[in-house]
Length: 194
Image (cartoon, rainbow, N blue to C red):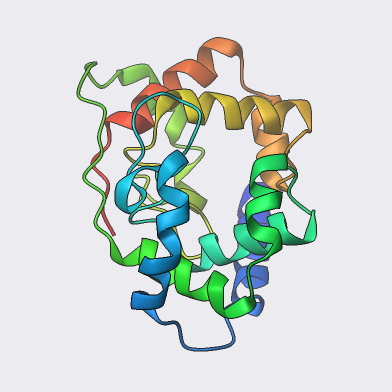
């Protein structure tokens, strides 16, 4: 049986995500209290505005959030603001924040534009890891309803190599500027779900 490189990379990342699952039960109430310090950038309950700088965290997968906060804390993912915010978080804080944001429904969706058909065609290559409707899969983020400008910025970061992400770097390297814009707008128009 032949497996594509993309499928193999997604499977490898999925296995890594399972290995790096949180080790203790999370306290959603404690996460909600801790999340108050996140509201200035990520919005009340983790639903950010459409200014493009910050992602919505509400409805994101707990494992993905746990991994990203751990990467910021360790310096494996570079962002001066988030590294500073994560530096003082304990493992319990990280698990609690991730559980809280995962528990909050995100109804954020871009209704300012019509869903572009071109973006739908490009999204086919993303569905293996990010789900058929952009809902994400465990260690892979939910992209549906995310801010389109934020998505553009992240795809640029993967393309330039300033954000590392295994297959994402290779995928983004093959996207044109027009592809990035169409794909980001398309994803922002999808209804977030779990």
